[in-house]
Image (cartoon, rainbow, N blue to C red; front, side, top):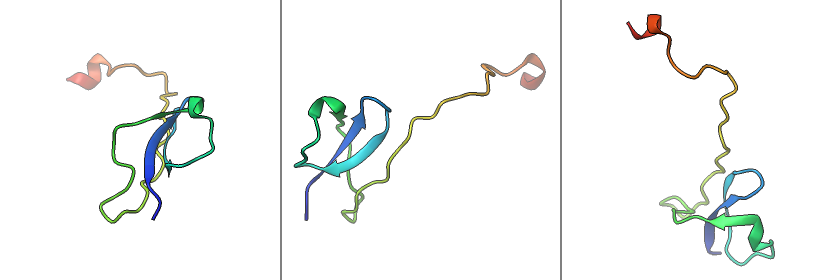
Length: 65
């Protein structure tokens, strides 16, 4: 079974599990210090960065009361 690592891609910010021995340019990602597989040894799914495009920054006074 191959060994997996968890990485964050520099260009997109996506976190992904990849096999450890890879030919990908190491400047393209940062290795993360978190689990790359679940408790059954399966690679974790990708996590994509969330961008808030609503423009709303905080609750209004009416919503607070």
